[in-house]
Amino acid sequence: MRPFFLTMRFPNSLQNAIEQETVAIGSKPLAQAAAELSERYRHRHHTTDKFIITDTDRLAYAVVRMPATYVASRAALLETLRLAPELQIESLLDLGAGTGAASWAAAGIFDQLRQFTLLEQDNRLIELGRKLAQSSEHQALRAANWQLANLRMTPAFPVHDIIICSYSLNEIDLVAVNR
Image 1: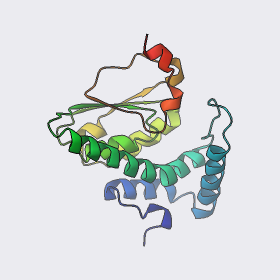
Image 2 (image 1 turned 60 degrees about the vertical axis):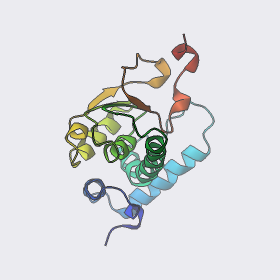
Image 3 (image 1 turned 90 degrees about the vertical axis):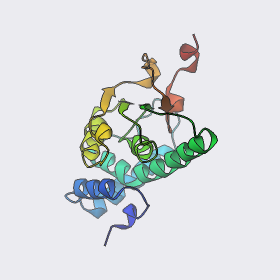
Image 4 (image 1 turned 45 degrees about the vertical axis):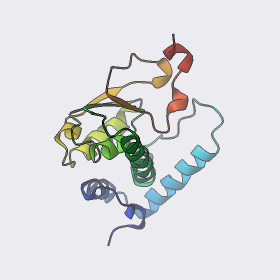
């Protein structure tokens, strides 16, 4: 039986990979980290607050936030496809990628996706995201280009067919982007 926190519908391979990563920690420390993470998100006062501090927090993020982000991103991408079915999406830029949930959602929608670039400011989340991506059936997601980048520093964003910025738009200096 799958743990209660992995019952949302998203790729079985991703679900299994998350379970493999969390098995050594146990449900009690993971639940505690998830509760603390949620509390930090709710009571955030500054856009510079760090929410994810420990590796247990990172796994809790994958367990709690990744399914929700996957479902929300999938819904938005399906609506995009419904409104513009002629779109040919071959490359994707995922800003503030976390563990890659939005990219996983896109991989399941756009068959022609051949290039993923994921920007994330937490190197340990990148490591976890890369590890989880290795379980994907989508070769391009397994070979994704993960880059360490703080969106507040407004890096030069590479050109892609579609850009996803789920839950990290507040990290981008939009004034600098519009220059």
